[in-house]
Length: 142
Length: 177
Image (tube, rainbow over all chains, first blue to last red; front, side, top):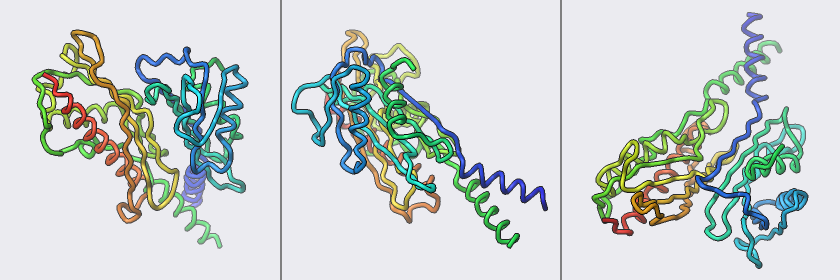
């Protein structure tokens, strides 16, 4: 009986804890090195200003980056960044998953895609999640 | 008190076992829509990337292998191309890059957004004859399946099926020889 209870506790903790995962993919023939200017398209449902975190990170790496709610920027850019952020509650709200897509501004086609998922016990601040997915998608060195 | 704790733990353990994610099934992603409006006599080879295998503890995904099977069966059933080669050589290369497959982490109604970038390349001339990014979306109602992960899988499969349908319609409109 004690052993069964111990097994149940381990199973329950396993269900709650989970593991962090990160994935990235690039379209065949994608040439990300040519991208110097970016436009971050604000997600309509985003009330937390995540698009500004993308702009800040891209700017910190020396790119020119702007953001807005429109599908297309007012001035031409090399690439458009779109994203989806997912949040969960565990004592406090935290970002559990962030997806990003880098699109060729000329065609609108996705050329790179990355995802970072971090359950509660491995949670990270949104700026770090943004850095993680951009680093993977743009093939930047760690 | 101890019995209640045991019951709660048992419930968590059951939820863990019951809620395992299963991969999207090729047969459910295959479109059985009407025959292609135009049937090419050429052959095609498929190259799929961007998909991901499903981890049992995460939400269902679509793997490259399963999407390839669904694409192949859909093309064969529609007759859009005379033959789908499993390896080169072929007259055309159909490249599909799954750039986005988004679903919520929890919830009753599940909306899945999918975007696939397609390129059709004429092998002899080594030139793209068609290139398009196709977006599809499917919402699964809460009563469609009991487990959340099953609703995500159903949404993935429907979004993929609709995506392939649109691709086939566009390729048929090219009227390839």
